[in-house]
Image 1 (cartoon, each protein chain N blue to C red):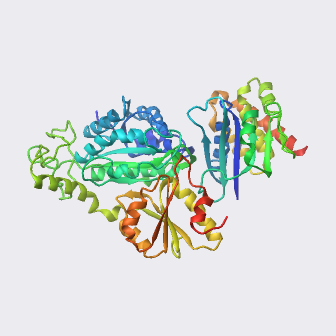
Image 2: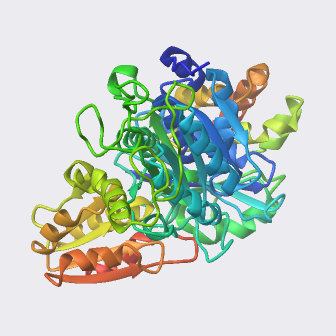
Image 3: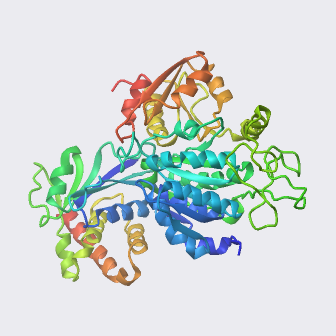
Length: 394
Length: 179
């Protein structure tokens, strides 16, 4: 029987409207609120609390939690559940995300709506399990082989862990694409105030189902409802014959692997269903940018010390600001270009050796100076370390 | 206004819960913003543990403490490990039975919270007695909000024990303050 989302029951299971909880748990809450009814995962620090929360909560709202044998199995189970017609997600961290890369590409190629929450840590390999980092900001974009676009959101607060998980589920349904919530060990384990939204404060998106009967329906063609590049979705068991393959396929889903135009048409549609809507994806926060002469461009946990540093710089009379990327991929290239024409210098704090620094440089196109501000080792930048980049003497 | 609080103890004494209660009291039952973080490694079981809380009336950027306004310790090893950032104006509270060596060359508030817990019949509520003592001593903390946060954070069947520990700790804290 198909899962029926029951908002009253979900709210009862989640408890008080205002809570003091960890970011990881807020991701689990966000999944429940968004109507996720399947979670397949494998425990990994610092993401385990997402699975723990789902294991406790999902069965109480009629959903299904499975601990799989590893992360490859986890994402495979999630993709299968999505094709069963439900909203499905998983959560992991760097090493598990690396293992998921092949099936992440499979989800992109088969246009499977699902969500991966990546509570990032560092690497290479198992690295520092208990500490936060932003190790996968490029892996989410380029980690699987072939040509593709990525959708990745980066929460900076516990509240955003919930809000962005709901948004990720919605985007995955709208675009039939695996969407990644790129949180990290710092935000994942931080406890902060969370306000659970009421039912009338949220908007949920459902994948569109075929309007044509079997025989006329094309599962991998532009929508037969309105011509959108996102195909309509026929779940298994609904009477439609749908062949799902990672091979290059035609509009019926059958493999067509040896003709250049077939491949280009398919892959370009899968990319353009996202890039055609580039403007809709732009989600940035501007802090004191009106008169800024120097600006941080950053995301996720790094934006927190950056915000503190901007305030310190302002007190010292320095015209500093911050542009925070809430959606990192698809990359807000026009907005970055606009900032580069406004400020003299952009500084890019990241808890890695400079990943998003590179697309920022690409899209500023030498209109202003772009400075890398990397920090690795499992600690956030200290506010005074970043204030020094702004010219504050300590 | 921004206050940074560090609660240090031995793994298993409940310092994480104590920090959780302090943060919850501030932002769920009180008017402030709060964040709580903790530090641990894969090998940290039993050794010194700490829970850190920042309370502010403005949005909190950097979520880790950059100093200590209030330092609370209920284990000697934890006191020794984490006393480094204590400033001359930091308020320090210890249980003298658990942290016998706490000479910082200046006054330190001493509250025998473990004894309070033992007198109530269960050492397990030592941390809650200390939350009470902190509330009695440190003017930022609101007694009503803190009691609500305690009740909201402990198992229902132990509510009375915990509220009593909080109350006795609060009175002992007030007493230490007036001495």
